[in-house]
Length: 207
Image (cartoon, rainbow, N blue to C red; front, side, top):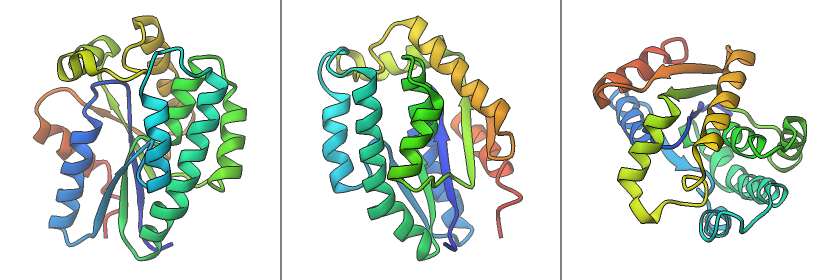
């Protein structure tokens, strides 16, 4: 694989989707082909699974079922979208990836080793070259997401504040354990400043 694989992680309302697009534009301005994709989703099969995962009542799926569905969606996404893009030299920017499963399903009691084992089987253990953890207080992010989505909040955004604090704590733990891959990015302030921080944190990977 000759491209680079980047993921943006963080809780609700951290600005991942916005920054994924802005980062792609910044890379393209430097002559780098960039593909923005998302999880769950990003391929036809994964988008079908996304509809199952994101819609309906909070209790629609057990945490074990969610972990399996996310792993299945990711396997299709990696096979059909991410690996082919990397092979042709594109930089792939993914709005959420394996760390979101570790955080969200981990906050519901699923063992991290089990999640990584599923990832090893379904997606052959593919990890990003660089993961950016967009850092905002959980309460701030949930407030942003509520203002954005209103009554259309998905099954995960609709959960209570204790859940979102647990998710944030697991993201922090992943960043502490894997500092070479995961870089914390201050996601407060204006969009331009956050994008500049992302580019600065990519300096060692840029040609």
